[in-house]
Length: 400
Picture 1 (cartoon, rainbow, N blue to C red):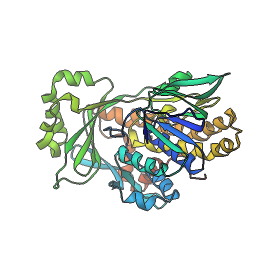
Picture 2: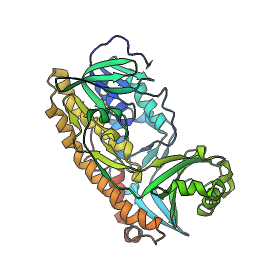
Picture 3: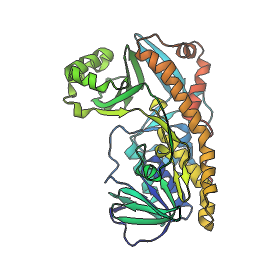
Picture 4: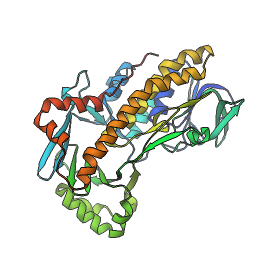
């Protein structure tokens, strides 16, 4: 893995901006197919807290298809078979993954840096793969209306195909001036850590009180906590003071009351501004956007990693042959968007419906809305949200 040096300006089959889940997965798949691929990542490592880290059944199946399932299972992770939500003294079951088909009837919780390390370590075993850390994508090179490569902090990288996988604030997407369609979201999320003790109940659940929704994720030796607030509410929360926030947190989740003092400054909280958007067109000649660069997802359901990886698999399945034969055209790139547009649109529509019908009423202090009560009354129906979360619309399979 290089750090900030592009070396000789050598043309590659594909250059990928961003080594998140989409970029890492696509790099592995293209290198596995014998292509020359360079992935650039502006950071020096993957160690950043509070990124998406829910690995759903569809992604676990893809890992199996790559022949890496047994090794992946040895990595530290937690497997979750059910999603529950606590309102007052009652817990409501929202999704039961044990009711879905297939080998993987659960989701895995793994820090994203571990997932990226796993993927890139296998990618580096192929001679055509190169990962450049501390190398920031700064723009595009364009000749006669066609994108011909990437400009980076250390020079430029010419390529037959340039892929933007550099996240929701994509520099490459901005440089390409691709049109975006944005949707409203009623909430933001504060993420932080609190210690976990051996006596703590091992579960992943949400807890609701008027105006607040708390998510607790088991990380083995600590809890990753998400505190959902109304959109734009962070400044009001901060103005009230950290002591008031700790007190409110202890009231909302009494099981954590004996450790809220571990939060000593606001710098220990990370604010996620929830956005939901997608590109109207994911491509232009020589350029394709995937993952968050093509569609920013809400944290609802934790589906971001899985949509990104599915994009990468679809792109590899459809583009390896034209890249090998030197016949890549914008029509090929449009096929990737057509393949992934429906799953993206349906998933975002579902997230927006959850925002409106479940999250917003709960944040307003209402009782659990009808969909939650129906799922509790008829447990067999929990297979539906479980399937949509864990497998999704049009799951991809490795065909390269």
